[in-house]
Length: 213
Image 1 (cartoon, one colour):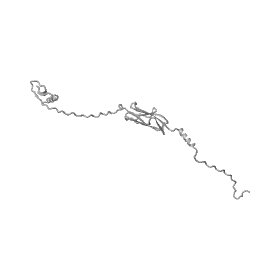
Image 2 (cartoon, one colour):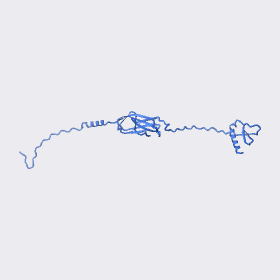
Image 3 (cartoon, one colour):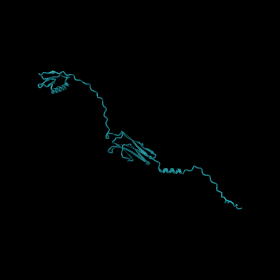
Image 4 (cartoon, rainbow, N blue to C red):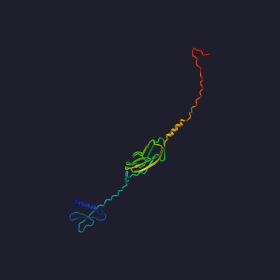
């Protein structure tokens, strides 16, 4: 069988497969020798019924539900739910040498393209960084307001938190008063007994001379 006839034969079979369960298929040949498959052969033409095999029906394959692909968080899609300053606590009083540690927690964690910056009484303490903590040394007595801000690459504030705290330190005046009060305390040693007056003595006699009569 020529190649083109094989192609026509195969194409015809594929085309007629959906109808094989509903009609009888006939095979005939036209004047050019082409094989034709049809379920309605023309009259006066030699036809041959085609015995087609029943199609193989495969059971449906159950496809399990795949977990949804987790979206990769980007600097534009991430939204911070909570930013809390854990040290010092709000309205806390700090005593001692004036050393204060500022620290905070952020949920979700800080994105790699974002930074945090600390302010004290509105003034920037240091350039923005990836750290959520900062140390303050030798702070004077007074009332302070500490604020942390999470910013993006353009400097836009995404989340912020603020606390108020107090620093108490002993003043130099109080220290001097304490020193003066210590030096003015009465002595605990018993007083010394008064000494007897000294009796004057006469001239001493020299050797070889008698004392005057």
